[in-house]
Amino acid sequence: MSTIPEIRTLPVPDGLEGERVDAAIARMFGFSRTKAAELAAEGKVSVDGSVVGKSERVHGGAWLEVEMPAPPRAVELVAEPVPGMEIIHDDDDVVVIMKPVGVAAHPSPGWTGTTVIGGLAAAGYRISTSGASERQGIVHRLDVGTSGLMAVAKSERAYTSLKNQFRERVVDKRYHALVQGHPDPMSGTIDAPIGRHPNADYKWAVTQDGKPSVTHYDLIEAFRAASLLDIKLETGRTHQIRVHMSAHRHPCVGDLTYGADPTVAKRLGLTRQWLHAVRLGFEHPADGQWVEFESTYPADLQHALDVIRAESQ
Image (tube, rainbow, N blue to C red):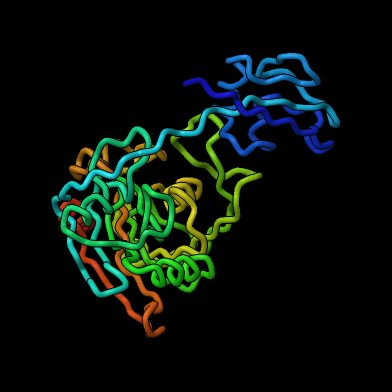
């Protein structure tokens, strides 16, 4: 069954005078630079009625027309047990789990692995029906390659309460990260906007036009060539800790996507970034009382930390 493509047309702001077509599309329509370039290459972009390529320049007041990509296909929830996923807390409103590495929070296009909500469904949990169909009950997420504590809403009041608490920055979500080198100062704040990486769809980066992003860090323990940090997020952007620490020239150990030394990861037996959500605190949706949960390090992270600590003695 064919569908009529959606066409959007906007005037180019004077502030984008002289910008490349792909950069202008990214700024005006919210696409990544890579996706904008793909649309131009497919002949789906025109300026004042003429089809243009990605590298042509735009001028203020011109009409930029883009044929929007088709919306992603709906994804199906598969109820499948998740090995290693622990239930830390469970009541009528909230279930708190320890998400293992290699597990996504919810289904998404292209993801064929296990998910948190699929694992909960397989275990017989009924969760909130609020939110998009493929991510019902999910009020926050962890990267597939990051382990740690997650809260999932079981009731509608919990979903509303927790989403509001995350939005208003009431939730205390703490991470521990083992990073390369020694941050200077040893405790501080990284305040730098994060947006899509200009050259890689799967990455994020500190960009001038990104969303405000603030990361607070404190030194827990210093080693010969690495530092263990306690990190608190003021905002919750995708890959925020990984992007900020990499931009600060101290990538998470094992995070090859964001510039970590692969020889160190190999020596420590790490196949992912050393990053773990260790603590989660929030006001309970039922009575407003503060509750807090903690998690120990998974075996692979503990092993890497033990090796680093032994090498520093």
